[in-house]
Length: 351
Image (tube, rainbow, N blue to C red; front, side, top):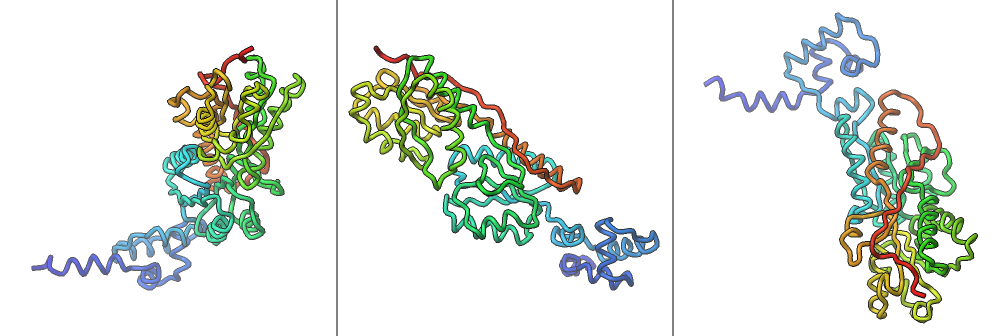
């Protein structure tokens, strides 16, 4: 039966390469690439030869062949510290939603807050396996990672500013404004002494500094006192952060906690309860991010809402615009507004 040989024919068709098409058409592989990409002028006669050869050989361009011909992969690399953290998961979803709409795929790399692992990912990505990088910092960058970010690929920083890198576009939340509105909220409730749980230096130092700066801009003029400690942005780091301040809480020397993310704030509530303090009866607690669990905690958490999805979509749109138009990315900083969400974890100071 004639159909018996069809599997072999199909296998042969799948194995046809640009070189095969070029030989069949009597042109060079470069000419076939130019015909596929449309980047260089090819005469209509030659174009018709290539098209006829492709049809006769049942040639279908693979993604690899298209990438070679077009000089692009239609893949964006997204580097985040930990996809298990809801904040970064939402950021990645925002990027992916725009990428898929525009015909791009997304390569997701998670660094686990490990600078060595981060450097290896960036070096691999910078080898031109992708068209561009959207990078959410999670660790202090070494020399190799900085060199990869300053290479030939278009790069956008999102969520975090990186000290020493000023020539890349950066899209962040308005962290300084976020810190300020936390201070204004606590001051309105009569608080004048706070424990601030900052990020440890290895975890997003610029973000943490800006939140502290914004907080201090409203807190210090009102005569407020600040005690500081640090955590690693996990729930588990919250209880140890408050453990050493039990006497100050008991004496009313500290009446509020401002944690630089929701997870540390929720851990702080856990630690305060373990010490016998009620929230907000004895101590008010404020977080930052507005992850979903903060709405369902007990009590629901007062926090600063970041529009994480917007951060991701804006980063993706900005990068794809540059890739699709050939325009250079413009260095600069875009700050997305934040909003205070008041819930039951904050209350007036007991006098």
